[in-house]
Length: 506
Image (cartoon, rainbow, N blue to C red; front, side, top):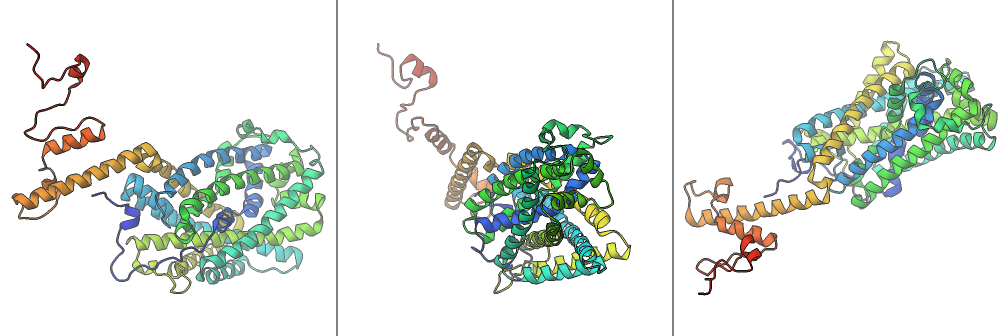
């Protein structure tokens, strides 16, 4: 018989039955917004773009997002191809297990679970940094960043305890506000014709990725790494397949929208931030003690000081939305791996009313709090140390998993219709052969202790039956039954126009 998917049929450990996530809770745009919120547009733009401009490829940074958009769109095509055949909360684990086997699936499953755990800790660190700066700049109140970090994690725990639709609504509101403030800044620069150097369309030239563009030395590898980092989380669309309506249709569409839509937006916003400051000033601000001024300055000049104050708060709420998205992703990975019997079965429990993986969610909250307490105890900076270090570790892990996933998608029979058809025919033929073997074994009691089925009895079927099956599938005339004269032509007799079974006329 055909071997079922490892990701879907491994049994959990004994002790308790896994719960079920609440199905049909999310529509298309719910999944899109949750995936884009995981990418965190305002956090990515304000945190990553200045670093790439100051230490990567200078004013050529917008071109890195063009490259990343193209490459990740290609990845997304293969990714959603597998999503049509494997609906699993542990998306990477399910895909790689299907294509490369359970050993590779387990390794990448552990790696992704770890990556999402450190991603939440990383993003909550910059959330705490934004909160500390906003209160200090606007109200003159100095609150230690660890208070924001622990408080944010506890609020996330409360919101994710309930059903997923509540988190989706909260994320939709927060995502809308952060996209709006970035768009306001961008349109302000665009309508004023750019900064001192104009709109600087040359920054979009893809060749600039390999040039210093105002820096002494170019670091294209670093700049591209930061660009790919900016998309981290778009793959979470597949994780919501079990909770979405019609996942085979919704998930592929949501993934493509998340990748291409985010790519266009990132390219445009990074371009406007560079153009709004000018070539020299953009690099100077990116390398200054407060790199966020690369966004605050054009907002204040072209839109107004009041919008800078709004942007400070929306940077805080946007990073909070991103942290909550990663929390959802990580807890669902724990749940799925526990359901497969890999993690302790208690992590596979879901809430009886809300259908949320509340045990896994609590475990992830505790882990994130421990991360934060560790950085705070050793007096590390929430932005330069906690945010950067943890994000780099998580991104390296995720890039490795994405690469292995592409290999799994290519190898899997579902990667192409022809391979899928051949694999399906092979499974059907194996089933028929196995059934024939079992019937033969039951009737003749071959020397295996009378056990029905198995591999050896399947090999005892009549070879003529196999030949008839192959000829029928190849479109050839069937072989005659035993005792009847043969009417089958060989290839040579066809060419000579005669039947080998008939005697030649005298």
